[in-house]
Image (cartoon, rainbow over all chains, first blue to last red; front, side):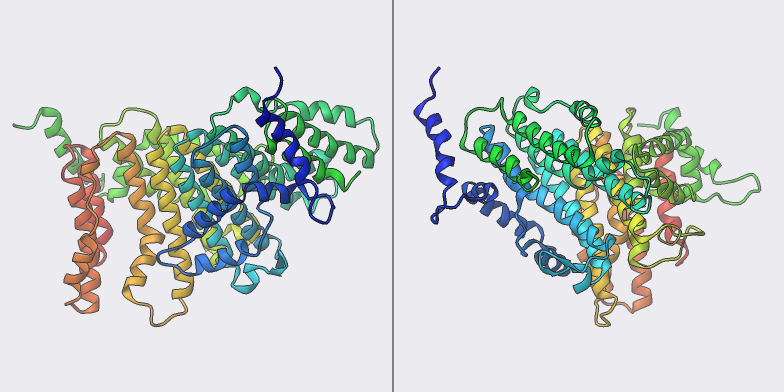
Length: 281
Length: 281
């Protein structure tokens, strides 16, 4: 069946976006932000509304300091993109994107206490400007509020996915605490740590977007490929292996997009997966 | 309608329990623990199962240090009691009691970091034995696991109640941070702090027990009485007022039990509400 005009347009459109006014290629995350600007404005409004506290003004102060420092908002953008890509026309993806950003912000607040960090996003950290106590407790507040937002979507599946991701994040952090002082830590341990610290929330951010849109479960990327990829990589040297691992994960991300219908966001997301590993090419 | 033999027995039985072998009065929390011992053994088994971590053995170590120091387990006992008192015969109250204990344990871990505590339940604190990092992150893990347990009950209402309670707990703690250094903090601020630090989880622990048992919503104690009680108390001196406030809350707790059917647990719980304020009589 030949593509409809709409589909053909969708396939072409992002290529135009790739050229900015000065002729240079646009970064995929900027294209994603531009295309989802309306949704993201609503996410930001919801974030400001829900970070408020009736009794403790320090909560929105600490949260605003970090959230308004202007992170890339890549995780909530992925939630919005996944929902839209699966044809979602409702309201819950806004709540889920805010949820994901709250969980991310809570982990950053706690991370900065754990790592005794002094700077984040070009600003002094909250633990430096206020104190460790505020960072721990405001993080707890945001985590609790994120579950409240999830409840509003009415989806137990979403709650299950993000509760598991949150446990995996904390588990990865605890593992890193002991692994950091252990020079015999294996690559397996390293992979478990970064799966918790980075991959778990990215994966969940995408998954819940699809779930809220009622996407077919079978479309999700299968598990178990990691072991296969690792077996292949065992025959390589360390640098090549690291590079290949990153490329293989990017390829898995692109493969996961394949069964989805043609959509401008599909090509942007594929571009994003290539972009984030481009530095190691 | 005259009471059935079963009801009459139920009304008499706790009075016998009040006398221990040496003739002294038993503490209501011990009676509660004795009557719910089978349920509580299952809660403890579930807690041990779910505090495990596939990758980070420090998580169960830190958790066991605190949980096995032998707190009174009053919050999970209240969840079990509320569910049984409302005639519940299912399995979910076990999960909810474990949930409540996990949330409580997570807040204790974070509290001890915030307060730089050295001792808890007669043992050195986790932040002293391990470090602040472990306490923060293991707390996060338990909080995430608690939401996973709630998801298993399939009740969005339960998730809503405990997400709100968790936010109120964190809000009370943040408010205390600023209020502690503010000598002009009012009684209203103090009440908000202790509502967060203590009342929120106790109230939620009872409420979710009733909710999981499908208890009638109208049976729950009405809101808004606080303002009325406070207006009355404004005419009294501080000590009398404090005593009267505590007694009024205990009386509200007993009043909340009234509409429930006759049950041995009902009298034990009424005794408990009197017991916890007996020290100020």
